[in-house]
Image: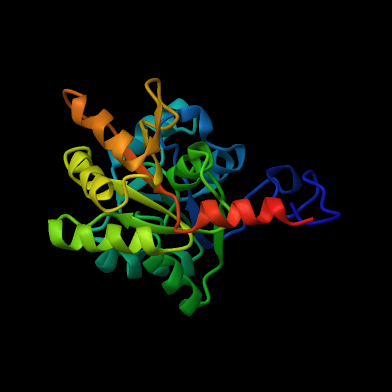
Length: 258
């Protein structure tokens, strides 16, 4: 929170305004697993908006019902129609409607729709409001126990094995911690690549974050690869965190400084 700010008086606080300003685009983060993680501000904004554009309308309607938001006009907005539907959303905002972009899980624009409408809103002079909320990237990073002072997020690892190996090689060479999403069906292959290239590198695999069966698997690349190879099947949402190159030696040097 900025210095000298008061959560009860800041303009972004739901307590400081009874209604959402007329006209605009509102980027709303959806819970990544636990519905209780939706914010009070997100609930207020969704109640006030005229239109909710969501990846899966059925999924979002369940969330709206859980939050007692009531019946709302919803339309689909996902990676396959994002480019064609964005002009419609911008026009409706220009006409004075309040349009929410609601993800199925996590923050808009982070491996989810949002970038195009944010860019278009800026270009059209449409008010754009971003509501902070749940993020699998940050949750996995914080829970990994690996350095968090600087990090790189690479989205989903490539499907093709050659490109995936090159991406993981680059991650191992970076000085920063790297975070990726990965399919459970390809996880063991990716872990085996890491184990072959840098068996001693600390990594963390998180599964089903914020859900009932949330787990974190810590260790070096060889250990974690062996652990998942023994499992009968890997299921759930996967986030992979890889420690950057040279982090251990720099940490030791920092401790030696007076």
